[in-house]
Structures are given as C-alpha cells and as structure tokens.
Image (tube, rainbow, N blue to C red; front, side, top):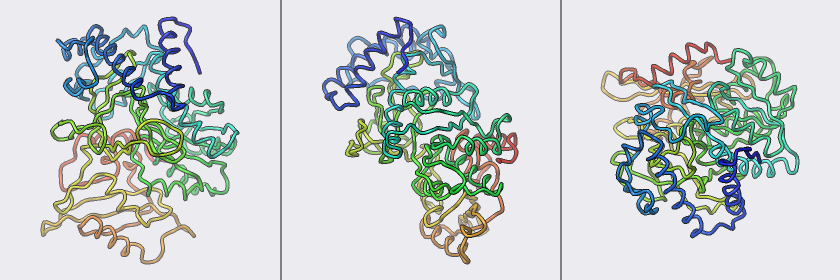
Length: 473
C-alpha cells in the first residue's frame, strides 16, 4: 500500500496500517478499539478547535484532552447547512497539507470543499481494498480482474480512490465516464468489449443505461461482454433493483460502498453483499431524524458519524441525513465491523394515502415481480375526489425479455395493494431523462414526480441537470 515520503504523515500511516492489519485479522479487541477511538477523538477535537474557525466557535469550552467515548453524544451536531455556511472555515489543516482537492457536486447548493491529506486517503482506501479483495477472491479466485470505473473525473474523489484501490489489489483499471463528452456511451461500450472488463464500478442507473444502450446497438450484454461483477454506489439499490442489473448482464451486483465526499468511505461491501462499517475510522451513532435524540449504536435511525482520522477535514457528530440500520456482525464473510443497511435519506419519505413510506418501500413495491427493467419513474397525482393516484412508468425491453401480455393491469394491482393507493402502469418507449440524475441530486428527485406539490429545489436542480445532459445514451 502507498506510503507518502513526508514524515509527518508517514508516522501516523504506519501506526494506522499496523492497527488496520490487526483489525482485519480479527486480533483487535474491543478494549483496544475503544482506547484507539478515545485517543483519536481527543486528537481530532483538539485539532479542530485549534485549526478550524468553525469548530473553534462550535466546540468552544469542550475539554478535548478529557473527552471519553461516553461524552460524544453531548457534543453539538455538525450539519450540511453548517458545511455550506462555513466553507473553508470547516478545515482543520492548511491546504498545503492536502494531496487532493475535491468538492461536492453543488447541484442542490454551494459546492463545499473536501480536500484530503495522505492520512485520510490511506485510512479510507484501506477498507475499500479489503472489500475488493474479499469480493474478488470469491468471484475470480486468485486472478486479479480488469476493472472499469465509471464516475465523474473532475474535482471528485471516485476515480482517484478506486484507482488507488485497484492498484492495491493488483487490478488494471480503466476510468470510463459515459457522460463525459470525450467518452460517451458508444465509446464506453466499445472499451468494455475491447478490454474485456470483468468488473464495472458505477451507479445502478449507469449499469442499466449501459445495458439499454448496448441493446440499441444490436449487442447482447449477457453474451457480448465479459462483465461478471457490478459494484454500484451513489444511489439507493434495493435487492429488486440489483436483480434488474443481474438479469441484464448475467452478472453479480454489489452495493459496493457507502459514504460521501464529506465523510469519505464509511462502509464497504463484502462477498456476501453486506456493507461493513470502517470502524477504525468512525464513531457511529443513531439519532431520531426528527428530534435528534440519541438512539444508541444499534437499530434504525439517522446515522451520525465522528471521524477518527485527524486529517484536513475531520467532521464531529456529522448528521449524514441518511436513515440506516446498524447491526452486529454475524456475516461470516471475514470482513470486520458492524453491518450497515442504508434505508434511504431521511427526507425521502413520501406520504401516499395518508401513510408515510421510505424510499426503499416505494422501490420494492415498484420492482417486485418485475424482471429485465432498465429503470422506472413514479408519478403522483391527486384526483378530483381527493385521492392519491400513482402512475408507475417502467422501461422494459422489446423481444423475449419484454413484458408479458396483461402485465400493466396485474402489476398495477400489486403496487396498489402494497402502497394502499390507486395505481396504473405505463410502458413508455423511453423514460424522462431526469431518472438518470439520481446519484447527482437525489433518488426522490430522479424517481418521483409528485404533481400534488410545487416543484422543490432538488427537483428543479435534477431537471436542469437532465436538460444539460440531453439523451442519456
């Protein structure tokens, strides 16, 4: 694994990697983890108070040197609004110490700075490396697969992070972004075939859009490509959506990682398809999404993380805005750390017929017992008699994988039963291009067109982005 030449970074990284090796081998006991976490918590808070103008105010009076893990829940939250207001004042170290400069996408507000130094890069990538080794050994044995990374290549961390991870596991990597004006979907498909890529890392939408584009070129994704694994991230991917990708490509789809530009990689996948918290890097809490009341570290709630790596931008009690389930690790895959299941964003709840539904419940209802779909959209209307009516639009292929006769009525009845509202199903030739924007804005803005209310800020941002892109393939 890469080590920087700088001594001020190298000392920490050597100490971290030694701990990480013991952690991944199952040799790091609970008492030792707590000692590490408490020591790093004190270092992070002291660094933030000294180096960050925001945290100097936000944590004024907090005795950093005496903090214990039990004190974490008494510290104030850091929110996304705080990051937008503070901008560079959130940073705890000078930009001169950074090895990369990134930003958030800025599609729903000002882009916030997310520089990283070597401590953060190595500590975050170490867990993704273990994830890839675990999955690749299960699928490919001793062979290092060829990997295609499909993500933005501007001031975004994806390409650098996964390029480093690929190097760590000995895999060749090609950075192929289909939405780039230099690449595009035809070139991306050509490279996938020419390079005989085994693994593709992308969003669920890109995986399905590639399959659709291949079909439009007269290619069969299952026969004409070598892809065996899709590692997906950036959008919600329920088992029902993963099944559509598996069917399209005759591949295995994994929710590869969970994190963000702000938090780095919080959890990464194992060969059994579960996400595991990178525990040496974070203190994870659950809180009530409405009140902020602590809910402990097991169960369901909004995820709050405190970063344990004292890099350039450590965040303290950061409210992710994501609803997750945290459970003990009984996976048996060999990867350590509690298991995380991402339920969806806290604000992606949707009221239908007087009942509140999470994003995954909507997607599950829409895709259950549906096969070979390239995507979907849900349109919500209110009828003249005041009842909610949903229209499910499914992108299904022609030919042998196409819809069975009578599917629309049968599936409308299933969705209506699952969600408790009237439903109709349509099979358009092509979905609204806004459905391709999920990873950049939100699942709700991309998948839900709620005509009961005025267009909100996120939906407007998603529609602007879709218009700028033009046709997806």
